[in-house]
Amino acid sequence: MEFETLQKDMVAAMKARDKVRKDGISSLISAVKKAAIDQGCRDDIRPELVDQVILKELKTAKEQVDTCPDSRADLKEEYQARYDIINEYAPSLMTAQEVKVFLEEKFAEVLATKNKGQIMKAVMPQLKGKADGKVINQVVGELCS
Image 1: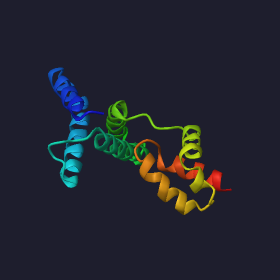
Image 2 (image 1 turned 90 degrees about the vertical axis):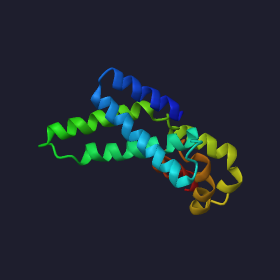
Image 3 (image 1 turned 30 degrees about the vertical axis):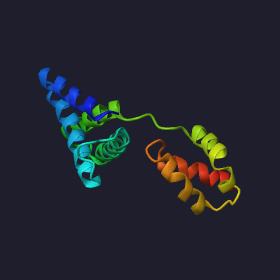
């Protein structure tokens, strides 16, 4: 996801006077800017960084929806709207089957060791932001057994 796309969509939401959408996109933009400053690439924001931040924000929004009490329907609705907006921008993640095929192709020699820690250490940098960590862990566990 390009950072400029987020900015253009926020401007469009502002022109359409869609406050909920503008607030959701605005929170994404500020999170991306903060992450860029933390990494020292304030002027050149890479799409990979944007994707990582979007996935992190998506996870946070999902936790808010899940932990919100049912008695607060108004708040739950607000969290769900934010989650839906962030989900529109989230990159598609690899399925368990795709992760398994990727691991068998690229990491055959490491898989042969059957050492889960060593495999995860080698695999995670390659798949970060492309697949969910839980899915990767599950597939590696199956391949090690």
